[in-house]
Length: 193
Image (cartoon, rainbow, N blue to C red; front, side, top):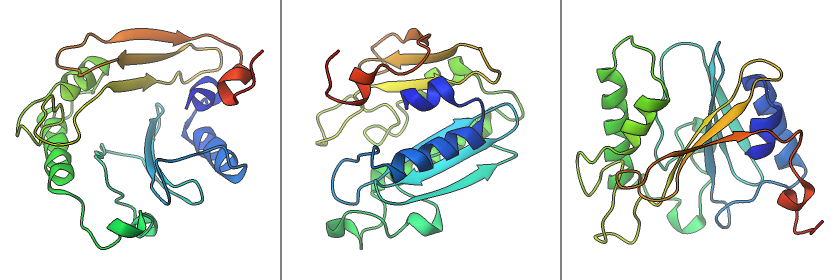
């Protein structure tokens, strides 16, 4: 993600970089055939990328907004999940959180959604324990942290990451600017400089 945040100036470049990283075997995942979901936005459009370490599908969004939780929505990727879960539908929690995310965005109407809105969404506890922000021991999973990446739209513009290094409802976001010219080699490999 850092490489894309540093180098991509738009959604097309983010997509090409992701294809290159997957092609070179640099994109890992949480286990055999488990996937990742990335959402990118530039001033003209949005980009949804669903991928495993072997396969990628994407969709550009020119109007409106999109919401994701923990399951693939693009047709090409729906079968690309862990063998043990291939016949499961998305979990109850994932579906409830997805619907709540859509609801929060619809409540915004035609207003522009900014970083502060995204922070507020990340702290939402409606539908607890199936909430966007779940700080409980009821399930073996819970919200651990939240990240918002604001990618600049012009060459030379600083990219920012807003990080809640803990449960967003009880942890302040910190803002980090990405000012390195390129990702240090030691962050891409286990090579120590």
